[in-house]
Length: 405
Ligand SMILES: Cc1ncc(COP(=O)(O)O)c(C=O)c1O
Image (tube, protein in one colour):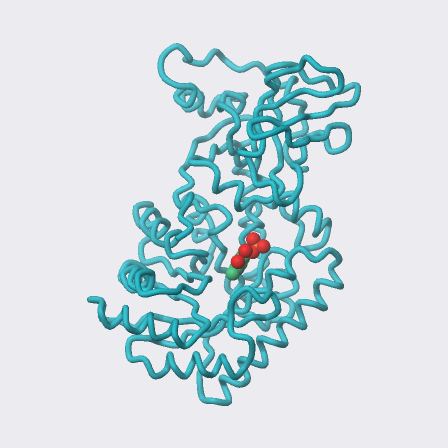
């Protein structure tokens, strides 16, 4: 765990905050810039250490630049225009979004933040005329690419573009299943069917292929992960070869995630990478990647929680439970207490934190939890509090929270 390891009850004293007037949120905001102000945020809350976040963004950007691959960080992790803007400022070619709704909101928020005409790739295929119409409308607001994995999807997009008012062509990427089995064409022949259909649609332009190996990202052991990544890359390569033999230019080969980024950079089958989780580096990734090169990012995201009851021997109760974080990847870890303290889910609103001497938490103590799985944890919060060490530096909206359509 990379955050400061000071036990919460040893935090330095905080100057009196103006709690009488306004909300707890106002009080925390009023203390921005003051040492110790981080502990004024009402819990449970999502807090990001910006020093660590910026270091993660700079590290991935430098690695990609050195390897000569483009970076299109996936915004599904943070859903935040603030974080996306940092990534774009660090040289990202654009952003990836999982859903059209996520892209709609982030494009508008980035535009307001001075990042107009951002390049966006929607990495999930869409189905139905209504969402295809939204894609066509969004193409007027940004430099948009969208993936497709079936000729019918191509037809829906072509019809939406023809019905719209835009004049340009919509860039379409063929999604290729490289082993995950979630979406994507399953081999060269279905890929040819999709790409020939795109080529025959006047309002569409074939932009390239996507091969995202979600099944590879958390494979423990770098050698095993590298072998499996090369198998997946071979599947993408065979599709690219078939498309090129059929006369199509495959200008873009996009995919990859945090767990395979270093391997993808070495192998160069992908020329654009879409890692998302590296900005926050959740516990699931930390456990899977350990000290591998792909794992060398700091855990920058925390669920801040408060001890609300300490009447029992051996454990205390905190105010962050099942509703405060995603629970699919096990319990969170407690910052600064990797060995002696363990968190257990204790119902919807509470967590049970065991402690071993000399640790002894008291009612009112604050703890930082490292979320087990960052993306769905972020999606539970309206705001991300920003801190540098123990000092609050601001708060920013999770702009695309809940935008899953
Ligand atoms: C299509 C696609 N690309 C990239 C990513 C980012 O992966 P990670 O968060 O593991 O870096 C994801 C995550 O689910 C994804 O679905």
